[in-house]
Structures are given as structure tokens and as C-alpha cells.
Picture 1 (spheres, rainbow, N blue to C red):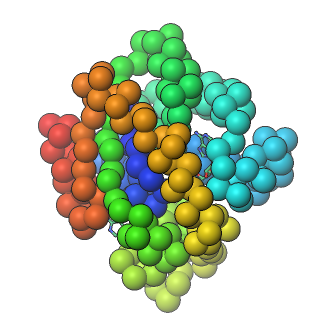
Picture 2 (spheres, rainbow, N blue to C red):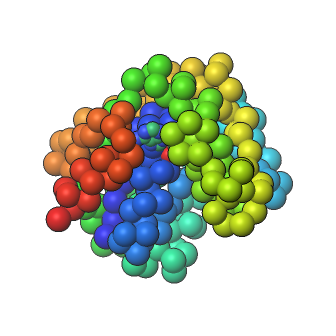
Amino acid sequence: MYLLIIGPPGAGKGTQAEMLCKKYNISQLATGDILRKNVNEETYLGKLAKSYMSAGKLVPDELMITMIKEEILDPKYSNGFILDGFPRNLSQADALCDLLNERDIFLEKVFVLIVPNEIIIERLSGRRICRSCNRTYHVKYNPPPNNGECDCGKSDIFQRDDDKVDTVVHRLDVYDKQTSPLIEYYRKKNKVVEIDGTQDLKKVFEIITDSLK
Ligand code: AP5
């Protein structure tokens, strides 16, 4: 099963993608996570991407398209994937379309999470992430268990640099201008399922899974 999830920063893409991977035994292909790993490991890609990411800007298309072409070859995606964070503009969407056609992969659905900006800002300022397993929490809605220790057993929970309010506002602007046109792009392909992402995360998950029955 091949899926795509779109939405503004903090809409819950990563949260839902993680739940979908468990249910359908597929893998999450999250470009933001791959980039952050490269930044932490100070790879060539990570050094190039770092300044764009911390400013809330998109990393240049040529880097992202090269990265996705290599990543998609990983055997862990052979059972299916959910794309989270790619594509982020129309030129990435065209590149993805070519890549999927070459591999005879058919995108089943494109989920679009809709969440107003003021809720996004509250969510992202409360978001915490486990550096070891990448699991996402929210201090109020989905707090880390065991006094700040992640379920994976490590106590390495941190806040992302780009979750500062000013950077979040810029990321929202980038989403409106560059990413939101993708909704119409995939609507024309009859793939889109729009979901009110302000609902409880279990309810959002139920709507997504019902649409896949
Ligand atoms: P990326 O990591 O993809 O960030 P993003 O799209 O901005 O999305 P987030 O990960 O911030 O949010 P999310 O929607 O996954 O929300 P989450 O589930 O965590 O990208 C980071 C940067 O990398 C970009 O700015 C760019 O520089 C670069 N980049 C990445 N891909 C690129 C590309 N293709 N091209 C160019 N550059 C690229 O949830 C957020 C919080 O809300 C959590 O705390 C969660 O617990 C909580 N929450 C979730 N759902 C609910 C709910 N229903 N109710 C209440 N709380 C909820």
C-alpha cells in the first residue's frame, strides 16, 4: 500500500504516519526525519540542508529529489510506504509522479489534514520528540510516559529548533504558498481525502483507516 499525507507543519502527519505504518505493516518515508538524521550525523547533505531547515525554508529541490530517488530503493519500502513531507511543491510532485511511474507504484490515497494556524502554533510549541526512536509527543495532548522517559526506554526527549514560534510562522507561510497547491494537483487525480485535523488523533486515524477499507 502506497500513501501520501499532506498538511501544514504540526498538522499531525508524522503522528498519523507512525500509526498507519503499524496497522498496515508499511514504512514511513519522512523527508524531515531523514534530513534531521543527516544534520545530526553532519553528512554532506546535512551540512547543506541545515541552514534552510533552521530558517523554516524548503531545502532546494535538486537535493530533495536526489535524496528521495536513493531512499526509495531501500528494501524496507517494498511492502509499501507512507510519504510524509514529500512532495512539498509542484516540481517535487512531478518528480515523484515520474519516479512512481518508473516503478509501477500507484498512490492509493492522498490524505490532507486541515488545521488552523493558531492550533498549529500551540501544538508545535508543545511538541517533544525522542532523539533515539523519533517518537512524537505533546506536553499537553500526548505527554511522554514515565516522567519524561520515552516508551523506547531512553530519556532523550527534546524540542526541535524550528518549533520556535517565529520559525513556525515562516513554515506556515511556506506551506500556504508552495505546498497547498498540491491539494488541487492531487484532487484532479481523484486521490484526495480531506480531514479535519483538529479532531482527536484517534478519530483522525479512524477516518483515514475507514477510507482505506
Ligand atoms: P518536516 O519534519 O517534514 O516538518 P513539517 O512538515 O513542518 O511537519 P512537522 O513534522 O513539524 O509536523 P507533523 O505534521 O508531522 O506533526 P506531528 O505529527 O509531529 O520538515 C522539516 C523541515 O525539513 C522543513 O521545514 C524543510 O526545511 C525540510 N524539508 C522536509 N521535507 C522537505 C522537502 N520535501 N522539500 C524541501 N524541504 C524539506 O504533530 C505535531 C504535534 O501535534 C505533536 O506534538 C503531536 O503530538 C500533536 N498532535 C498531532 N495530532 C494531534 C491531534 N489530532 N490533536 C492534538 N494534538 C495532535
